[in-house]
Figure 1: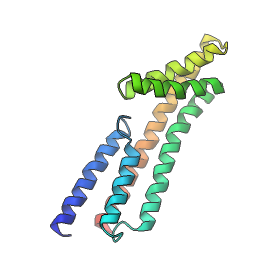
Figure 2 (figure 1 turned 45 degrees about the vertical axis):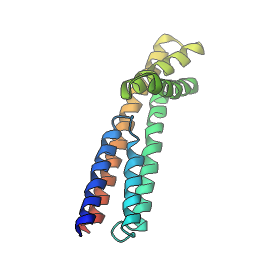
Figure 3 (figure 1 turned 180 degrees about the horizontal axis):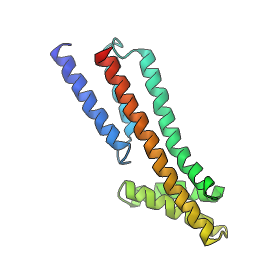
Length: 165
């Protein structure tokens, strides 16, 4: 590797590590950052070390990560007895919580409050509504673990193809 390639690689890895942190702190869209950095690196490199197939694999992993994050919350609410209104409330609460809260706490609290509030609005029992809110928290936690694992795997694949392969 030439000196400029080392600098570009190091910058890519540093930005990807910030993206990895972003999977835990929703202020940074972690998985999309990792994918975009890998794509830009592939283009700069002329798709020599990071091939088109590798970019496709990373893109699929990124898509799975984003979908899994959303579905984990939805499934968490549903498994804990929440209705579709509870699921809707958790999504609405996440969005509102993100903009009103400070990152992760706002998302978690917003999703919980949204699920509970929507369950209560449709006349649900408070116990059932609280279980739906708990399901939101569990789903959010599981989704975060899946996102973090996929993001770490994406970075590992990138490093493997860029340096070790």
